[in-house]
Length: 241
Ligand SMILES: [Zn+2]
View (tube, rainbow, N blue to C red):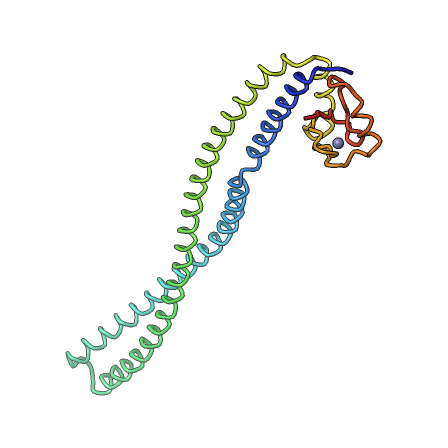
């Protein structure tokens, strides 16, 4: 087939625009923020599972702590009662001696209960700290997700504007190209990853980067400028510079 070198040149301009549009679309789809948001979602899911477990633990320990406080309060109340009885000197000497004995036992019991309470308190604080950590992590991740979404939005707007400009240029350029040449280009482009036309640089096709054999090169040299070449390897339209 034939097409003037001018048309072939326009075709290369069209290829440039198509490549640009493809690259912009690829960039749009593969914005790194999408992967980052996926990673955030996965972390949030794990965090939510752990938070549920830890919060249940915290509830249980809070109940233990309250129970322990009640025990200490009961012993303290009992001791106060005994102390009042002793200072008032109520009862027989034997009864007072028994009260004193009971007081000593209660004091020992109180000390044990307070030790236990302290232990529970420490456990409670440790779990509470983990709950707070998880909640703060969650907050940080959600904030980061919002920031990433803003970045995606901005990048998308910017890329879409560039795509629209290139598509507009393409729309103006395509009708200027010989229809038969354009049809071949579109057909090849579809099957060749978006590249339908390539330059012949030296003895290489710039589309598939393979060397054209010597015999074919010799034949090409005998062809007229308006003869349309095709790469024997990739079938792309080969444009001479
Ligand atoms: Zn080729």
